[in-house]
Length: 120
Image (tube, rainbow, N blue to C red):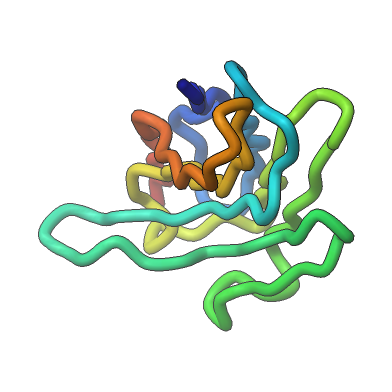
C-alpha cells in the first residue's frame, strides 16, 4: 500500500505565498511522476504542475511564472511553492503520484487534499 499526505494549505491574502508539501510512504520501490492538481468548488479537477523522476517540469498556463514544483527523491516528497497568489487560485490542492510498489505494480495514488484560500 502507498499513502500520500499533503500539508501546507491555509488562508493567505492576494499577493502572498504558500508552500505545499506532499509525502508518499509505504511499500515504494521508485516514484515516476509526481503532480499537483486543484479543484475549485463546482469545477473539475485540473492539473497544476508535474515533475518527472528526472526533474523535468510542466505547468498549467495559469500558474507559469508564479508556482514552482520541486521534489526530494530521498524523502519521496514533492513541493509546490506558490507565489503571487490570486483569489482564483483558491481550491483544494491534491497530490498525485505514480509509484512502483514493493509488490512490483505501478500504483497511482491521490492524497486527501489541502485547502488553499486566497482572499482579495
